[in-house]
Image (cartoon, rainbow, N blue to C red):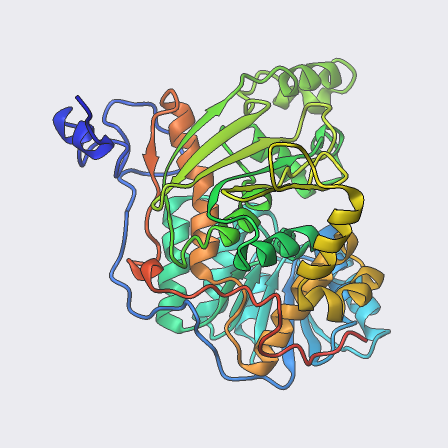
Length: 469
């Protein structure tokens, strides 16, 4: 007898208390969230497609002048119409280093530093339009919410949120304040990913069936470094959470190709993690030579690799993997499979196929590339590569954000993307903790996904008039 998944939940008495809408009663529960998970909300304003009033000059206040933050400053000084008016960092030396750098490029920001709450003064400043957030993960939602509460648009490094409560805070604050909240997912602006999005929109793949993405990036040395991350915050994340901790790099571009939140939505997931075979051993090895590492011995480290499978409401499937420990070559996979063709970025070189006979020739690949390279790459790509930031995709991301704000356009990604993509972190934890049981993914759009129109304007149908200098 065929029984639907929801009928099974009803028949087994799990509705309401089960992982279909909350946490299964009696199941293991990660400490980072309190059940039940909310599945929807009363939408007060649909932020999808929302265009704020244009800003001729976008006054930027940046929080967190560490590695990512200082890199952002290097890009920001090259964007027309962007004025850096404020910087904040817990460490005065980092904040002042950032100020001295941007002063050499014609900016004179106020500095807020020296206390854990100094960043709030930046958000409260009347001289800031956009708060650009480059802090450790656990601060992204508090920073973003406080910025919006104080009348600022918020742009945060990934992930935008780490708990379901934080996801809803972002959505409801953005809707109530009508301030943009964008997650700075740079991979959505990488060149092959934008090309495959253009190919998908023009029907090259036919109907999209399946997508794969990943964050496979060996970071053992940096995670077990006393200097790479302030207070070893990234190692702390890996020692207290077991799930897909960084899904956005693999998920974002696949979700855009599948029109997730704009005609489709992520319905449910299952997630599985291996045991930890590496991080605990590394802590023991380091502790044998340096007592500093003793407190990191015996911790319950995250499994070395996590695999999360997602089913969409329209029947598509997505696989996302996360591994920052094993000695695998870097990959985000980026595989798109449809009824007429397939593209895969890694292992390099990128490949495209249109039949079971194999990948197209180099000559055919070049012809496809010429036909489907989007306007954003043709117009800004070469300059973005020169400015830099992961090969130029960081610059394209920042440039387009400022271009949209200056022209009063909807942003290429909205708060519903930030919440949905980030929700995979806590939801995957619940699935891992409960023997990979299915977990429903909330509808952050309150049903608007059925009529929302895709946002990512890679062909610059509007705007595109901001210069890189």
